[in-house]
Length: 232
Figure (tube, rainbow, N blue to C red):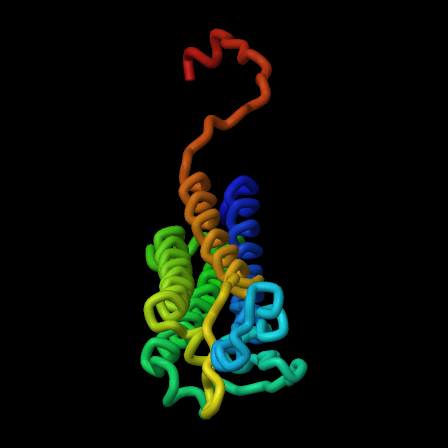
């Protein structure tokens, strides 16, 4: 049986692994990975709009990994529209990169759950196999954190290198062309960052749990040695 000190650290690691799992699930289910401002360039060029008039041609866009929406402002008032990534936008986007983001996140969810199970196991008893002990917990946390970091990095690459927001904004637009004025990463991205950070904290907890601290013992009564004790 592990001592109380190690039980506490493994319980904290289990809680962090479960929190990481919840954070990724929430992040995948929300539509707020990215928000931005879009300018209807075609409409602004047609009327030769100046700076004060450009407000009439600036709309909003938001999207997640599976769906999103936008407000088109082309001089005739705002028009809302919604879209889904699968299957409509897959031909417009870098499908391989988008699928890789989902694979990375699903892998991170799996490894976070395995880490949670191993932490519970180590809090209850000392496993007889090294892979089920602290070494295994470190491995699963390292994989979960790495997969989450790769997912976030891939999403940023899709936005910056493959112009993800611009491609989504111009989806099914045959007449008007939209350009991106600003982009902002939203809560779902930061939830994934928090998830990866929790696994880093777990690695530190497991490392600390392996440190041997001196045991404090109560002072015992001094033994009295008699002649009979010496004889025996």
